[in-house]
Image (cartoon, rainbow, N blue to C red; front, side):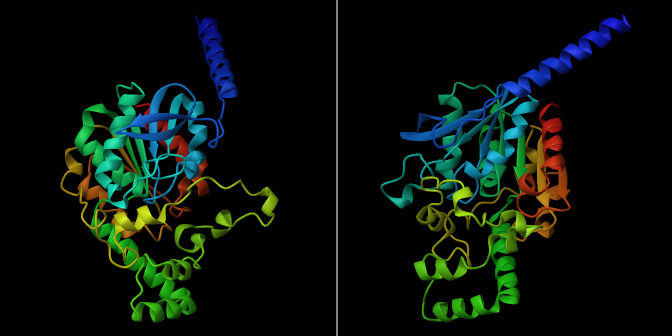
Length: 326
C-alpha cells in the first residue's frame, strides 16, 4: 500500500512539473484576443489553465502589462486572465472622456466574465484595480469564488490620504520640485495641466512606491528595455476619474466611492495585501481593512512598497496560491 502511495505521489509530482513546464506565456502585444464588452473591444491575454483568476490593473489609466509579474501563479493550476480595460492599452478608447467611470469599469468585469462564458471567477485587483474589485464583489458577489485586494483603497478618505501623504513626502524630500510646483499652482495650475504633470513626474516612482527603489529603475541600456506598450497610461482618463486637481484634492468618481460599510457583508473568502513601505496605500489606513472586513485574511509584506509582486514575490505568491486553493 505504501509502495502505491509513493508511486501516486511521484506521478502527481511529475504531472505537476510537466504542467508547469508546458505553460506558455504569450506576448502581451500579440498573444491575446479581443472580446466585445458593453459595446467596446477589450484586449485580453490569458496564461495557463485551471480556475479563472481575472486581474484588474491600477491607475486608473494603467494597462495589464505591469501585472504580468503574477505570471508564475499559473504554475499552481490557475488560468490568469489579464485585460486592458476600456480606454487603456490596446482596448478601445472613448470618444468623450466622460464615458470613463468607475461604474463602467465594474460592469466591464462582469461583461468580460459573460463574454468568456465563465461561471464563477476569482478576482485580484491591484491599487485602483482593487477599487473596481470591491465594487464588483459588492454587486456581483454570487459570481466570485475568491477576492484578492492588493495595495488598494477602501474609500475616498483613504485615497485622499494617499494624496496628502505623497505630497508631504515630496515637500519634505524634494523641496526643489515642491517649490516649482507651488509656484505654478499659485498661478492657477492644477494637476491635469501638462506643466503640472511634468513637474510632479520628476519625483522617481521608487521614492513613493518602493522598499527598494533600485528595483524600479529603468535599465541603463535603452536597447535592453521592453518595447513601448500602446496607450500605456491614459492621463485624460486618470484626471477624468480622480478630478482635475486629483493629485491634491480627489474628486469625481474617486472622490465619492466608499466600501467601508459593505465589506463586512462579503460572503466569499477575501485576502487583503499591503506593503509596509507603501507611501500611497499607506499602512495606517490599510490596517483599517481589518475593521471594515474582519472576516478577511490580512497580510502586510515587510520589505515591500506598493508592489509586493515585484519586491517579495517569493513570499507573496505562496500566500495567494494557498488562499485560492482553499
